Every structure is written in structure tokens, then in C-alpha cells.
Image 1 (cartoon, rainbow, N blue to C red):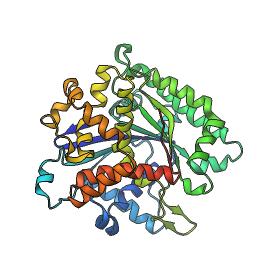
Image 2 (image 1 turned 135 degrees about the vertical axis):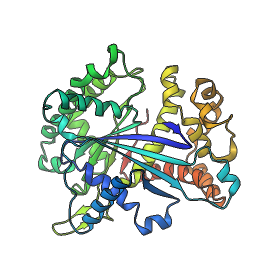
Image 3 (image 1 turned 30 degrees about the vertical axis):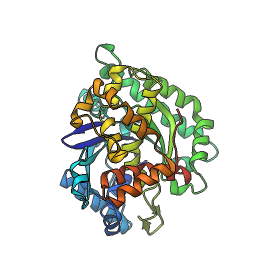
Length: 387
């Protein structure tokens, strides 16, 4: 996580084979945030930083309402940046004291074809490496498991799952030498790899526990091998979570002649996952002393600011947010980090209620994000690692 120009910036990388639903999912995610009902009840606006991208995604979403699917984006590697701009409260003092003014979500879409097909010449090979390099700053990676493919291979799911994971593992190995300059492991790399069931509406009897069990039973060894490959790319491989978190996603309910865009699953967890899951996990790893100093500096660079915003005015930051980027101030902010990391249950709800009453929308939004993750687990849509 990074703090840039008064915005806390979080990156999420989405991987999946062609046809696994990445474009539809992104369009549904963004389009729903532009609906009048969402704008009325939400404490923030989701704004596409590039107007053209926002228009295309919104048009895709509106087309889905008329049963038109977005066009496929073969070999298209695109990053989408969204600013989550908080509505102004009436408490001027609270607004002025905010450690940052907005959240920014950068969504990296990696072409599925690059894990399924050979590249066409050195130019495309270099583009593949450059594209992967651009998403190395992602805090969370989603690896999509296509619900349609699972359904097609019912009873023999391992045929699909082993192919998916093998292609992905080999794809990483094929660019390993280009990623590791002088063979040195990477400090900056996605360290939380969430297994996500896309098109989960096709499997209504599969909750997140059943999804996990299918993966472990049918392709557990392949997940371990994928983790080993990723561990070989990063510094401090103990601070790594691959195939330990699971989520169900559905962009809409698809019928023969109608697409119900309001019947979505899990997409409302995208922002909470991007904003809060890395914070929770990175602080836990730091508490367990699993992160060397130079890795901690990168992972926890914006954690102090987020923690201070999360627990509200109880703690004061030691100077400008930017000062929290160095190790000295990470130590100074230890009390803030530990306090924020353990906030849960009734205490979390109380902080949220107090923030809403004071119209401190930053704290209200972040506490709501954590509550959303808890609710996702209660509804058996999300399963977070305990490590």
C-alpha cells in the first residue's frame, strides 16, 4: 500500500483464463457504483481516473441490462484506476484531520491468453514481461477459477483445475529470469493470492467452504507447487499467502434472455479486500516477525496512515503521513497498528457508529469495509486465512 498525494493507493491484480469473466466482472463492479441507489446510500463516489475507461465500463454494464455481453478483450493488458472520493461531512475539524483524502484502487487485468498460448515473437514476449512488471506493486492478486469450466467438468474437476494451475505456474516460470534482475528475489510482489470462483451463480450449491474443499481435494498439490514457484520469486517467502484465501464472485445472474445485474455475488467485497486485507495480513506478519526490515518498509509504508484513519481520533499521527514511510516512524506507529489490527466485533461497530454520528466518513468507510469482510465470512462468500 502506498500513500500518494493525499490518496491511499491500493493495487489489485486479476488473473484468469480467457473467457473466465474478467471484463464482465470489472464492468459490473464499476457500473453498479454509478447506479442512483448506490450513490444515495454510499459514503463515497467511485470515479474512473480516465474518463474513456469509465465510459466504456459503464456502457458495458448498461448493455448487460439489455442482455448484451461486453466484447472480449484478447491479449489486452490494461490497468484501470478508480478514485474512491469521500463525501464531505459537516464536521470541518474531522475533514481537516484526515490522514488522506481519498482511496485509489488500481485494477490490473492480465491477459489470460498469455498463460494459455505461446507468445508470438520477441516483441510480444517483452510486452508480457513489461505488463507483469507493472503489476508487481499489487497488494492482492485474484486468481479466477471459472465456474462454467468447473460445471463442464463436474465429477472430474481436476482436469480443469490442474490445467489452470499448471499453465499459470509455467507462465510464471517462463518470465522468472526476466523478472529477477541479477537473480535477486523481489521485495515488491503480490503476496496475497486469493482463489476466486467466478460465475459462482452457475453453482448455487457451492459455498466458499465447498469451493475450498474442491480445490484442495482435486488440485491441492498443484496449489502447493504454485506457491513454491511464487516463493522462489520473492524476498521473505514466509510473508506469503497463496491459495489460503477464497472468495465467490458473480457479476450478475445470467438467463437465456435476461441478465439480472442486481443479483451479484462478492463484487461488493472488492474494495474491502483491496483496502483492508493487505493491512490485516501485513500487520499480522510483522507481529509474528515474518518480515525483514526492508520488506516491512515496503509493505507497511501506508499502514500507519490507514490505521490512524481506521481507529479515528484516538491516536494522533507523528507528523505528516509521508513520514510514516520510513522504518523509524513505523516503530513510532506500532501502537496505532496494533490497536487498529485488533479492532473487531462490537468495538468495530461502535467506532463505525461514532464516526457516522460525527460524519467522519473516512473512518466510517474503513470500518465498514472491515465489517463487510466479516459479513462476507458470515454469508460464506469469503474465507480468510488465519495465518
